[in-house]
Image 1 (cartoon, helix red, strand yellow):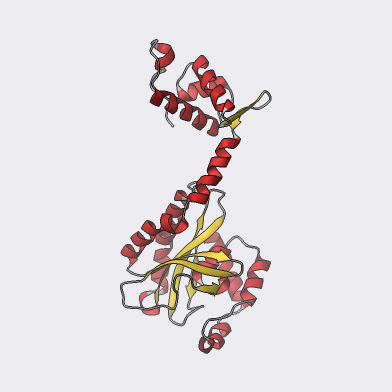
Image 2: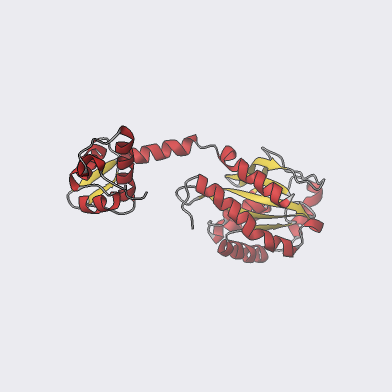
Length: 269
């Protein structure tokens, strides 16, 4: 928040309006959040006199938006933590993500998925079918083993290698006719190499791992704590998804995931 242009309540003798007082109070909170710890630092950041700053800060401490210690100075208060958790609970991931999913679908003409982790599985929360006349088995509410999908691998990026192996060994497939073929594809060593690459790059691929001829590019979504809480993907069939195009889609999918993450409170990286 920028410093206020003038401290009308102290510099020219006029009384501040309710809106001005509110904005000053918010400016004090922003200054403390940015690292200001004493009245001089806060006053310099906000653009108010020391007396006005003290009055605002004292009110915010009283209402628990700030806390004060003689040793460390001012810091953000417990009321902000309470409001932050309440805001997170009121945010619907599907509602927040939907405009970004629609934009990604319009940009790529491919099928778009939004998924979350549930134990060793992924659950699809949203799906926008592509415009190429292709039908995939995935559907909203569909559950799949996490290690068999692109979105699942994106959700696994920050797990340990031991956990990767555990989830890899639990792979099963919805259609038994495909299971033997898909389970024979690659090996744990190959899976590990791919996951290490994905973890470094912040994305993941499905290279026909889950469904024959279906490929996808996925990226994780993070919340305010920077934890991975969901993932999105762009999916299509092999003719429309050669490896070169998958590489080109990485920054596009990551950008969409980052935009959703920002809406959930994640700091920009």
